[in-house]
Amino acid sequence: MTLPEGWLGPEQNFLGIDEPWCHPQQAGVYVLPVPYEHTSSYVSGSARGPSAILEASRQVELYDEQLGSETYQRWNGVATAAYLDLAGKVDKAAVDSIEAFVRPHMKPGRFVVTLTGEHTGALGAIRAHARRWPNLCVVQVDAHGDLRQAYQGNPYSHASVMARVVEEGLPLIQVGIRSISPEEINLIRSTKTITTFFAAQILDPAGPYEGRATKWVPEVVKACSGPVYLTFDCDGLDASLVPALGTPEPGGLGWYDTLTLVTALAEGPGMIGMDVSEIAPIEGFVAPQFAIARLIYRILGRVRTGFDRH
Image (cartoon, rainbow, N blue to C red; front, side, top):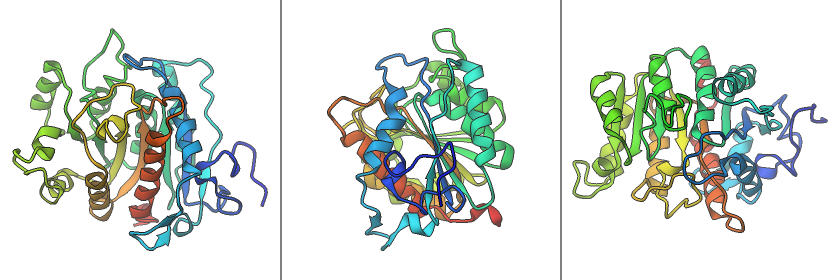
């Protein structure tokens, strides 16, 4: 099979897999690169995040030793679309274009991973999934609340993206939050559809969950009211694991706690889609994007194939 126009081959695609495993006609996973960046407020460079993740992914070992299998075969392949060209669009126009890009790719039995730059790019992907699964709930792994009504005068700032999600009535479960404003705290306290698990509560051994994933992860799962859409801001992880970030924060999730969380979400309410944002690559330092590429592949290994058929 020859790849149709608009799809990336093994020299550019996620995992570097060859045909037929990268062909969109058969693949159960689609990876959609959306390099959007407009409102970065500290370190810029997240627009290069999707390409850095794709490049690093071609070094990821395809065998998952915990599962005892090669995940891409279980999904009948992973196809990677060509990068979305936003042609200078920003804010609402960019979000609308991202939604329009993602929506046609959602089909029964397919899992869509959107790679974006700043977290605002996730909003279009979330809206696309919500149109297909109106009962979904959004699980946000993040260091920041992202619940400001506007930041630096822009309601489409990366610091406001989850406020837009809440406005649309979608249940929001936040995990790993450790940088937040009084405005956001007030919104959390006054909004029944927001459940927040602060990093200090779940990760500190002196906290109520004693820092043990076996205690706090079931509570996250219990808070999910429907199938999960995972929006994964890479600064949700501890900055010692992934330091190449637009807004780094210490004290975040570790590797195995994150895997425990996504495994429980996949086996419990189920996961129907995800996005990854906010990697700002550091020249000559590939470990952060490699960690994220491997994490995405590990997550795919835990998601139930064909979930939305049931």
